[in-house]
Length: 238
Image (cartoon, rainbow, N blue to C red; front, side):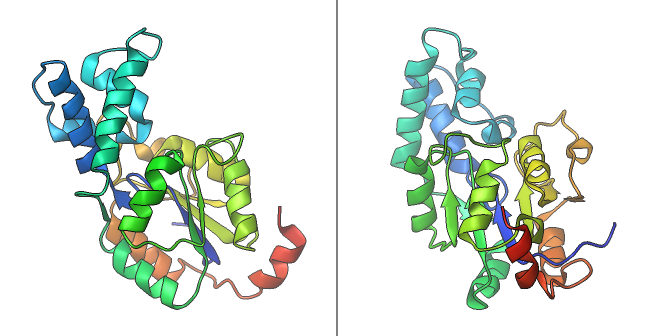
């Protein structure tokens, strides 16, 4: 692995990267199937589609593509079921939870940039007791990932240069966004990745198979320290 500068700030995708939300989203997906008189799908089948959003889960559950006239109504049923129990089984991935406690105690900047609508992301984060320095959701800006603007805005709100940030995600669009934003693109293989997809083919700077390896790298900085980054950010901030 090529040594990387220690991050001055860390930004996370939400579902499948920072928080294991698949159990609650799987329950909502199967609630939609029950509504249509169908048997539940296996958890692992649903898990691989979670990062693709509610529309993908509707397609998985009922075989209705986004263009189908019944797709929107089915999506409402799914999301209503999810909203009623969005933090029942969702938890921060271990050992990220412990690492994050330490990072927060040190008052070091971190945040969340997600394509999840704020209606679902904000109460989830509040229930889990997370205190990110910035939370940007799908409906907060005119564009969302893989566009770089949400990542730039997050770095700006953290008063950190883009190049001093790591962006961690479990989807190829996360890596595309990080690269476009000039951040270190960190891909994780423990997230919600379809079985046929090879996450090591994503355009990342570094890849971690499990959460423990990610935490080790975050703790060690994987190379040079970020000394002087505070001065640099004033000349390179977007």
